[in-house]
Image 1 (cartoon, helix red, strand yellow):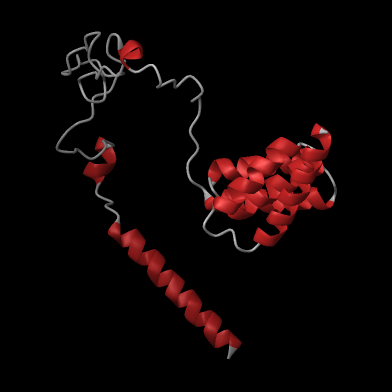
Image 2: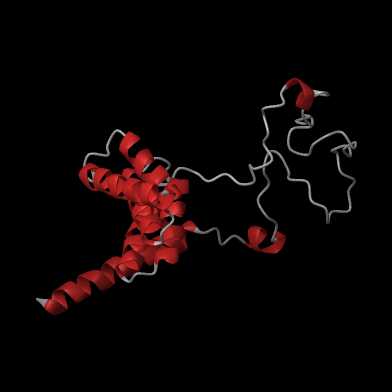
Length: 189
């Protein structure tokens, strides 16, 4: 049975190979020319001896769309819109919930090892890739609380409670807020 299958595979392989070989053009005219097939619209090449048919671009033209669009802000734009400070915008991140989930997972790993700075960085990164993530926000608040950054921890716990899907850790967040409030009032005295 095994030899019968191997013979069948051998015959099948030979028939496929011979089909490919017979499909190729073995004419002597094609072998002598050795030229690439002609297309209807030849591609301009920089190494050709013939001059290019495309006129050179002027300094105001773009190579992609033959026009350049001015995206600079209008004159006096800053005076007309003083509240629109965009100087802090340096980079955009795409919404990536998978990356955020991985950052939360790694952050929780660091939390278990009491490496709070690394955990904080991972939770902040998770919130960059998925703003408003309930778990990342809560975990960030916990890490800030563990580092005694009480004001920021309080703010982050409050942000967590404002998230619609914040029901899972809401009791813990409320307890932590009450404890932080007691700490803050005791420090004021």
